[in-house]
Image 1 (cartoon, rainbow, N blue to C red):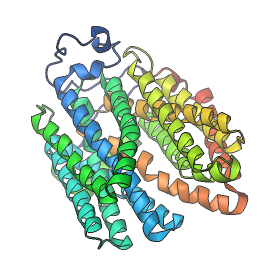
Image 2 (cartoon, helix red, strand yellow):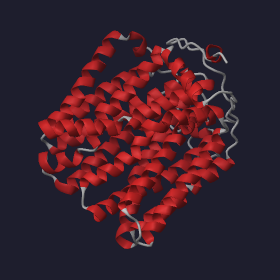
Image 3 (cartoon, rainbow, N blue to C red):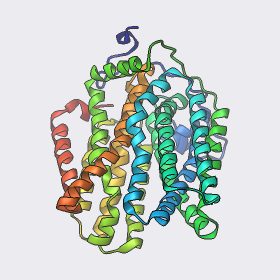
Image 4 (cartoon, helix red, strand yellow):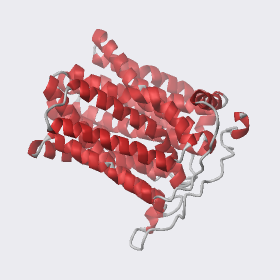
Length: 441
C-alpha cells in the first residue's frame, strides 16, 4: 500500500477537502424551534438540525452527567479511605495516563472499523467497569488498589474510544457545521460539569457514594441507545498490515504536513504547560488567596463558566469566518490567563482570570479539532485525531508532575508562572512569524 496515494496535501486557505460523508438528511426540527438558532451557517444550534447528530449529542450529554457524578464520588471515596491528597493524585494519574499510551492505537482502530459499532462496544465496557466499582463499594469490599486498577481500565477505554468519537462528529454533521458541532459537544460537556456534581453531592449526603457509581453505570445506556438509532453512513476503510504499519502511516502523514503538526503542537503546549493550573487551585485557594474550600468551589466554577462561554462563542462562529485567529488568540489568552492566576493575590481578579482561561482554552483546543476534521482526508482522520487526543489528555498528567516538581523547590506560584510564561512567549513568536495560520479558514 502506498500511503501517499491515500492522502491529500493540505494547503492553507486552499484545502482540497475530502468528499462529505453523507451524514443523513439535514432536516429542520419541528415547528416551534426558533429558526434562527438552526439556520445553516449562522444559527447557534445549527449542528442539531442533523437528526443523527441530535441523537449522538443527547446520548453523550446524559452520559457525561453520570461521568461527572462518578468523578466527585470517586474523589470523596479515595479521600475518606486514605486521607491522602497524594494518593488521590495517583488515582488522577491512573485515569489520564492511558491517553498517552493508547490514543494512537485508538486512532488506527477508528480508521479501520465501523465507528458506531466500536463506540457502542467501548461504552458497554465503561458501563461494566462503573458497575463493578459500584458493587465493590456497596458490599464494602473495595480496596485502594482495586480503585486504581478500575480507574486505569476506565481511562484506557476512554482513550480507545476518543478518536472514533471525535471522527463521528464529522460523520454525523457536515463539513460546514463541524466547528459548531464540536462547540455543541463542549457546551454539553460543561453543562454536565455543573449538573453532575450537584446531583452527586445530594446523593452522597442522602444515599451513598455507591449510588453515584450506579447512576453513572446506567448513564452509559444513553449513548448506546442513541448510537443504535443513528443511521451511520460513514465509510470503513479496510486495510491490511499490522497495527505498527498503520501507526506509521499516520505518522508519515503528520510528518509530511507541517501545518497539522503545528496545530497539534499548540494543543500539546496547552495541555503540558497550561492545564496543570486546575490541579493546583486548592493551593491558591488555601495558601495564597485564603478563601478556603468554599472559595475553591467558586474558583473551579469560574473556570467551568469560562469554558461554557468559550463554547457559546464557537457555536456562534460562522462557517465562512477564519478559524486561525481563534487558535492564536485563544492560545495567547489562555497562557496569559494562567500567568495572571499564578501572580494574582486578589480573589476577584483570580475569578476573572479563570473565566478567561476556561473560555480561551476551549476556543483554542476545539478549533484545532475542527480544523483537523476538515483538513485531513477521511482515510487517516481517526489517526490524526488520535494525536490531538494524546496531546490534550495524555500530556496533562506529565505537566502536573513537572509543575509539582518545580513547586517543591520554588513554590507553586513561581512554578505555575514559569510554566505559563514560556509557552506564552512561544505563542507570541508563532503569531509574529506564521502568517498562514492567521489566515487559516
